[in-house]
Length: 626
Image (cartoon, rainbow, N blue to C red; front, side):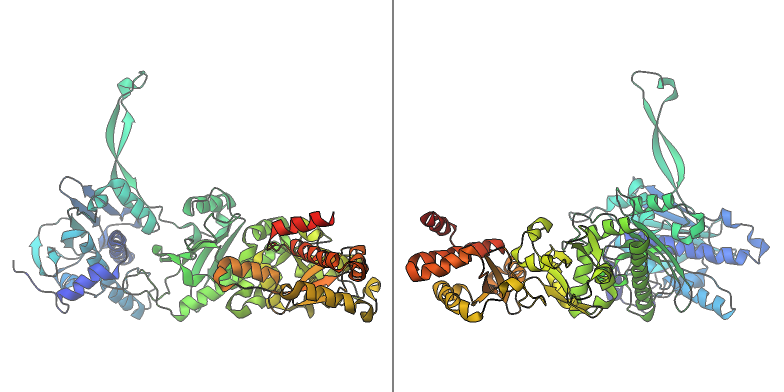
């Protein structure tokens, strides 16, 4: 029996295939099982019109056997098998696919058959874990069986053997362990079981393996010290029928909930289950879930977004990021399609129009479901928004506001009048007839905003305000700019579009004291002005220019070396007793008047949530005035 060289590929190509194409060695089992499933598909298809096959669908299966002592892993199927020409063409030529050829032949006959395999390299992934591969096979309709054997790039041999049954037996001689690699895991029954569950759970034929289990010996069953014995039981490792392939009306919500908990390791039920099946230019099924709570690592770099991607029931990617936009990264789920153009390793996708179409459809579906939850399941939507609302806001801000139109209806903010989360639609519907702006105020929490002096004038008119308590909120509203032709207006803005009757003092009456305070404070403030918005409070600090205090805090937290600082504008309530006292002191005790100016500025800093440059100096200043 002479050894043959691979027809058209070099050792370098095979090395590349074994060491570079596949990310994880465990993939080999998926590839071999997928090939076995293809082989059964072919014979099962033939059996529909050929009574000589002598087998029904229930007779087909794939078997796995691990021999730890001899380091042998065997995968057997009773599919169509191969003859000598098939071995030469499919295993002797790297990157040749018998499944792909078979599928094309059936399509030419206008027969529809779903075959997993598209490439001929999957079989060779076994060389990642095996130092020698033996393939014993007998093709349906042939009297002769063959053995194909290879140790890798040095070539292969083919010889005739005796084999009674049709099908293929692949025998892997597992490599010895090294310092870096533990190959023993591919001989452990529970490791093999977990790999089948992970990658091949939805192969449509039973995947069988003898499992060693333990039970109490019958004679010691009632003893205080029961003894145990091992026994072997053949177990079906895969579930075969994916839950997303079943009709929605045939699946109870409890089944979806249990699937979600098990598949995505969650203790909680999903807030919403989305089932969709699409046929047309691209055909796919999707089972998506909106979680109730954000994972602990959700807002970290470690969190991986994406949906699990299957092709005809075989897991292709655990996290296909291309299927989810960033603003919906919280969605968990599965997409199964046989229309995708897979690359050579079946681990990654080519960026083709089918993938783009599926992603676009899924984005629209999620948006529609969230809208439906908002209008029909308000309590659940508020739970969702409390968990993932920040992500929706990030989506509005990201990509220069590209997604703001599709996301703005999903936004919610705490309302000053309703004392709960409200939508922008709800706010606009409640606006007073004379109200010009959508007002918002920023602070650490609702209680803190309630006490902000700059909100007094807005409250006095009975206008509703949106409370912004997250760092992204102001960026979100500035990105939106307006909603339903109503412009957003911060409570800090100079022009609130409201007349303050109590602040109509003549400018000449306040010019002198404003100049005095500015000269006293110097570069600490950009301006000192008479406030148009203060009612009962004496002082207020606002920001001038494009940078607000919230932005200052945010940028200094993420990039402190930049020294980002908003321009401070000190607003004085000219009708407040403290300001009037300071004004009178300018004439009688100018040094004390300067202390008043410093105290009022420090109080304005505290109200704005900004740090005092020298707290000790401030307390000494207060003491000197007491």
